[in-house]
Every structure is written in structure tokens, then in C-alpha cells.
Length: 388
Image (cartoon, rainbow, N blue to C red):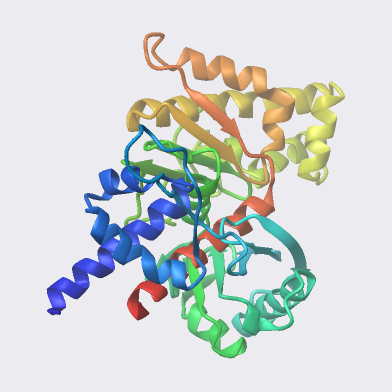
């Protein structure tokens, strides 16, 4: 077999694994149509996955009176265990998942600081704790660790920039793999990881084009086009964080008036009410006061919701998608001011445009950690391809 043939077979196996993972159970005829594979090629490529217990065959009703019933392919969700880790500036949250990133156990630990060695040690502790909570005897029962972080990541190995941790050029995957005895570690920008999870297992499953918008410590934006997560060298730089949304809004720390960070991030919203009240407030307090009808809190959350609606309209209009997933730990804003957001969205979207399907993911940090697990699952299948 030539190198070119081997490379093509590896690519086809990768695509097969991806299709079954996302769309399974899926018929062989549909797989052949999607991938341009003959029945013989499909049988050959799927055999290693079946032999490893990663795929299972189902039984499909026979169509017509001739031939044997088709056997659709699906993943065996309990065949491997993965751990997804979300790292913020303050905490490490981990979940153990199956092959479809369903959370089975969780653990968390506060960070005492941003020193690289201390953060790596905290991550390793959470990995071991969540593995134990999931019933794993030890880390040998874990197929891989995915780690999502707010920042720019190169090659799923090196954190080039992580503002919330004040890091630059940290070889996080290498450091953590050494700490975990060689367990494979994949690192990715948190919004990219979350977008992958929404595409594979969440609200975006089966939707070829959609966007993800996150609000929380910052403001994030992910995009899927033609069934592919869009990733560029600039992913993770927070380029959606300074969209101008309100010409009369407050300033962000970079001096932009009424940008998405100033209007929608948790620190931005808390700062607005804190200045008005003359004291520090938490995000939960902002939302509680708004729900109780406090005029200042209502005014701030209503303005934020209008800005959110405008941002959703911008993204839907410019990317020409009709599905958006809204997520992040700041999603409580939607609960208290959904009406204002929807009004602004409708005002800034052409009445003849396709109706926007908006999905609200309110799972908070668990969604981020599941996204990290999805990245680990993707890389685990890549490693299997290379050894098949």
C-alpha cells in the first residue's frame, strides 16, 4: 500500500468515525452516500471500529422484498471514558463522560493563583477526583483528557495566550501529560470546544450551519459552516468581545463604548450596578435584584438584553445562519430579560429572513467541560485511525 493510499484510507476512516459519532445510528446506505464509499470500502473501514468495540450494529427494517435487512452503525457509548476540564481564572471544573460526552460525574477545585505549576497540579487533582467519582479504578480506564481554556491555543497543545490566567506560550498539554503519567491530553479554546460539542451532541446536531454565542466572564462566538467547525489561527483571541452594540453604553477596560464586553460580560454587568450602588455586587445579586424589580438592576439588565438581541441579529445576518445556540455561565440574563432581547433581535433582522431558531443551553460550566471532552473524543478517534 502506498503512502498516498494509506493517507486516503486514514482520511476516510476519520470521516466514517465522525459521521457515526455525530449521526448514529445511521444506515450504511446513508453513510455510503455521505462519504462516497462503496459497500465494500465501508465494510473494510468499519471493521477495525467494530473489532475494537467502538461501533455496534443495529437492525433496520428491510426495505422491499429483496436482499438482507441493512444494519445501521452506531457508537457504543460506554466503550470509552473521557474527562473534560474547563479552566477559568478562578476554578477548575471536570466531568467524566462517555463517547457522546454525556456527563457522568463531576468535580471542581478553586485556583489559589495563576502560577503554571500550581494550575497544572490543580487540574491533575480534578482529573483524578472525577475519574474516581465516575467509577474508574485509576487513570488507565480513561481514554483521554480534553481541556478547554479561554484563550488562543496552537496545535491543541500550547496555550499561546490566556488573558484570564495571564499566560503566554505555555505548553500545557505536555506539562499535564507528564503530571498524569502519559495520559493523552488535548487542549483547545473553550468556545471552539463548546461549538464542537453542540455540533456533535447538542442543539446543533444535524444542523449544517449554525453559530454559538457565549456570555460569561467574556463574550465568545463559534461558527459551524457546511457541517464543519470554523477554526482559524485567530480563534480564541476574543474577536467577538468588542462588537459595538450600544453607542450610549459604558466603557470596557479597553476604552470601547458599549461594546459586547462592556454590555454582556459578567464583570461588565456587575461593574455597572456596582458603580450605581456604590458597592461591589455579584452577578447572582444583579439578577435577583432585577427579578425583584429593582429599577437600577432592571435598567442595566434590560440594556444588556437589548445588546444581546442586537448581537444575535448581527451574527445571524452576517453569517447567514438561521440557528444560534446561546450558552455560557452568564445565561441567567436570558431568564430575567428575554423579552427585551427578542425585541431587539426582531428589530435588527429582516422580516423576510428565515426565522431564527434560538436554542438556550443553560447547563453552565458543565457544557464547557463537556465541550472539552468532545475534543478529547475527536483526538482519540484520530489516534485509533493511525494505529488501525
